[in-house]
Amino acid sequence: MIRKGFKMKVYPEKVTEYIKRHNPIWEKLQQVLKDHGVHNYSIFLDEETHYLFGYAEVASEEKWNAIADTEICKKWWKYMAGLMETNADDSPVSKPLSEVFHMR
Image (cartoon, rainbow, N blue to C red; front, side, top):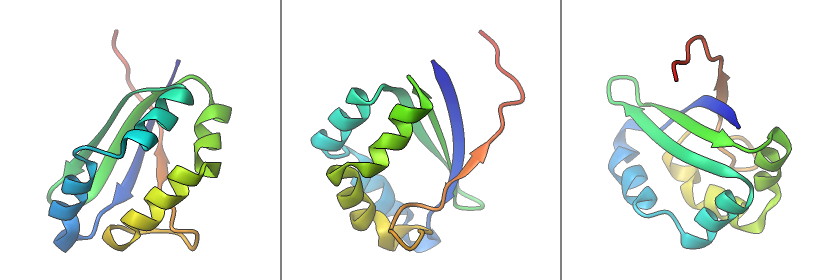
């Protein structure tokens, strides 16, 4: 299992809507995540900076990256695009974080 940490940024005036749209996320999207080996996926908000910290445990980088090619993921990106910083393809601007400590 690979632990992934990453950060994204939500627009300050869109935080409430961002939270609303994730609770719950679409069932089809959740199933795609599970089918691609994603477990223990959480997103945390830093209310001062509006950065989102994502954490997921994934089966492989290949399966994780393949999620972006699914129709449901692209639809989700388009749905969320107005709420956060995005790339030209509507994917969220996501910066990987390096793990510096882990305790079991």
